[in-house]
Image 1 (spheres, one colour):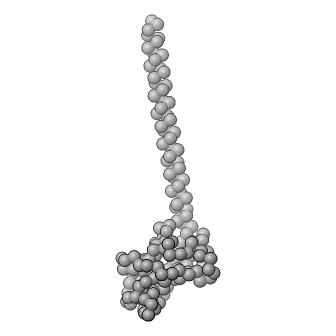
Image 2: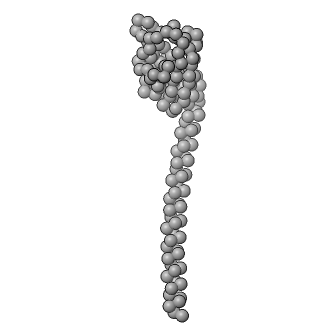
Image 3: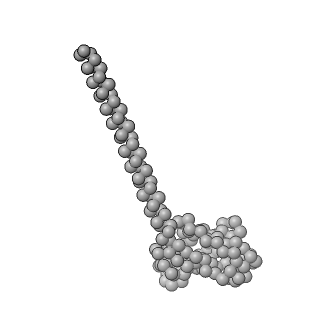
Length: 150
């Protein structure tokens, strides 16, 4: 009888140890999932609050034929500031990434586009005609314009 009780106690303790290990793993996994969901939520919130539009006239995108610079105008249509420099945006014309020569905030020169402010992006591109122009922010917001570069 005593050996039966002893065996049951050992099995009971073993089950408690295994249960504690499994529940510890579940707590860790749940915590990691919760952190990941929180992170994704912050990224999505940032993406939704930062928005812009390309406001060039599609029939007449300005180009300086002497310098080979095409000028794009973007307006912050989001609710938060957008850092405004060549490292924040990527410009793709007809599928090719183009060099950004300069950026300028047309309202003030603080390097940030406040909501409803307009900025200018000068791109090294000297071809005329109709082109597909895509501007991508570092947050992943993409805007496309089919336009004629003059």
